[in-house]
Length: 215
Image: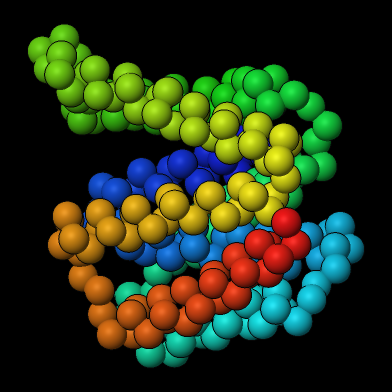
């Protein structure tokens, strides 16, 4: 199950990068920790204080705003990214297994899907991984460790210092994604998305302030 969830998360993220939806993906990573708080309450009976409840409400409002006023450009990429990553954390929290062994088993489960996808790409003439373009092939090879190493360190960090501290550090990722998407790749950022992001940032600030006070 954890392998399937991380496979979905990686696939959607790659799709987001390839289709100029990095800002939408960053939206998902911004709301993910707050969704995890809700999942912790539902599945682990973790207590919710007023600040965390308010953060969850604000995230819900931001999603509703996008659905009501921007249904054609709903950031479904971000929503899937957030849900798949949040449920991945939920499943991994229930699994009592070492980080490296867990990632190995997940990767082995994902391997057949990756091989099948590579086969489909090859027979349709879209394979860019070849000796004729060594520079691109090297970048494709590097994409593996650039994905697995941060994931390993994140999961290991949760085990060592808990969700609170890693939750604060985690927000570096969507912040940099948003900056890249808007300033470097010039992705569209509508007024509705801007308002929704403001609400989310307020929710994030409230959430991080609560984590800081508890730590």
